Length: 92
Image (cartoon, rainbow, N blue to C red; front, top):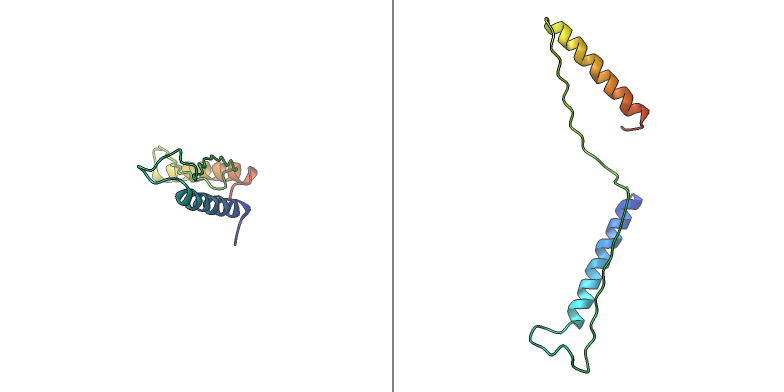
């Protein structure tokens, strides 16, 4: 399955590769005259901005209680609240 951001990234990588290949064949080798009549200088820059499509989050939930059952119930409640917030914000 191909997403638009993956297609954009692939296109960017291909463009950089092609520009590098063209530049390598045109730019004079070190020690060559930079100003000879039969030379072409090529330079360029690019910038791509895309929305992030993935994030990794690690959470830890800790609870203290007089009994282990109390701690388990508190942790379960907190995890349920976290899952509800994620669902409300459409975060899988």
